[in-house]
Image 1 (cartoon, rainbow, N blue to C red):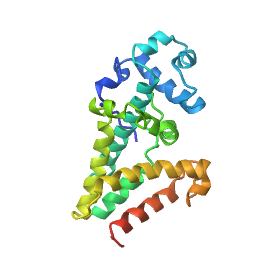
Image 2: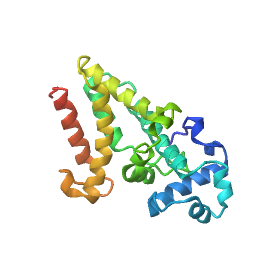
Image 3: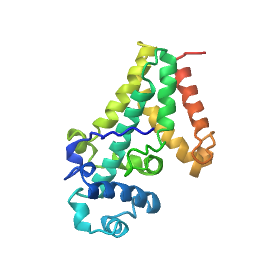
Image 4: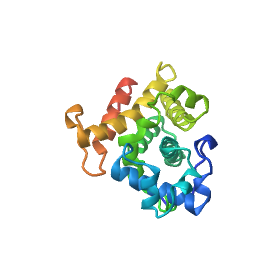
Length: 227
């Protein structure tokens, strides 16, 4: 999908918008590659600076610390998925088909967009699966929530919840179902790849078809909507 877009994120996530400069885009690009390579625990700005042949000081001009950088990347992905849902469901009138497409998008949002050269969505998706929850399963979550750092996730959840309510206005847990669909997608891809006895789906490379089938099964059975 060759669509040039600029992701809008909370300005509190960064000291300087990395999307606006070549150096900032380089920081995003190489941080994705390095976190995927070494894991978030082992990742730090010194290693990032070495990988991108720059200085730690240059990274600190954009991000206060590595947690804020991770939260930036996770928020970027949440907004990217939300954008894809809008594109993929455009002009879809059938409510069931709309939720099906949303589920497919939640699972398969890793397709790389060549127009955003500094973000490899496929690699970023691996980070979301393996490391994403570390952005908000933290001690300071309430404080960061007050700063609006999770608004992109909330907007994404609301978008999915709206699709649920359209199918069944009386369904009592639309937000719970929406957030669970996203979390289940990531968790069961991770389980299939690393802890297979915790799931019943199989994943081959980036083929997540079984995860899509499982999520649709849960969603439409919970909503009591049959073919």
